[in-house]
Image 1 (spheres, rainbow, N blue to C red):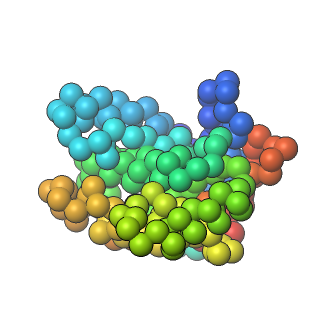
Image 2 (image 1 turned 30 degrees about the vertical axis):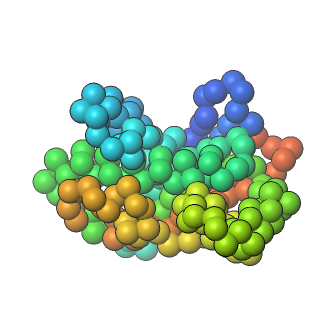
Length: 210
């Protein structure tokens, strides 16, 4: 964990990525090295655990403002489709669970002291794509419930804030896992943050999201 009293940068290292950087500003930050949760991923893979544990997000940040503690989990995406956005949700959930497992080794840690927020940062949603996705679900009566489409439409279609509140029961992969209350969030706000088409980075003020 590293302390910063200035802006922090979360980067996507792939040379092919279009969205390369998220900069958080206007606070003091404790940044957790994401290698910690990435190392746990291989453990869960070897144990043949649920694939919800096989994902990791790009950045995990702790901050405190106005007497409240926050855990920000950020994931950068370079394409916009229902599969990528839904996968980003799973990456954020997975990282939350694993970092809680690690943090509970600290005597002073209590997950209920922290407000968890997830940020999916990517290119603007294609309006035609979202409209077609909505029509597909609305018109096809035989279409089975599609978790990916449902989530993306709730988050990005007709939602000016592009924000939803996620609870553990909203993720079907968590329902049958014996995780207990200590590993799971009570609720988490998830945001979709748009990066302009001609930009590869974005700067966000913490105070706009607390």
